[in-house]
Amino acid sequence: MKYLLFAACGLAAGVIGGMGMGGGTILIPLLTLLCGLPQKSAQAINLISFIPTAAVALVFYAKKGLLDYGDAPYLILPGTAFAAAFAYIGGNIGEGVITRVFGGLLILLSAVQVLFSFNKKNRQN
Image (cartoon, rainbow, N blue to C red; front, side, top):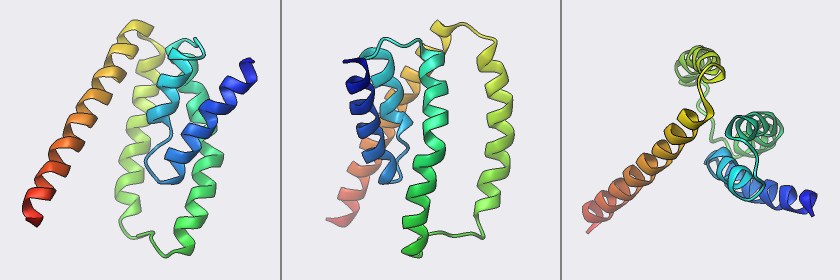
């Protein structure tokens, strides 16, 4: 049963990740809430699952000509540096803090998404 639950979580993350939205947004909550994994373990599994899923999605996006290679270094370089710094910090703080920060981030992202989509609708009318 455990493996079916993990497969269902992987399916959900694959759908979201395949659309370019970041499967971890759904995978981490699913792994913690449904599978009972600790937050740090869920994040680690998300990172390892991200590599092949992102690679597959990237191939399809590249074939459609949707990649802007010129701007990529401006995102990748600071993103990699901050990922290294915050991976170190995250490994040294309590799981409760990480859980609250991640939950707060999801709430913030949801609110921003709603506000921007509402604003976009108003501009079109």
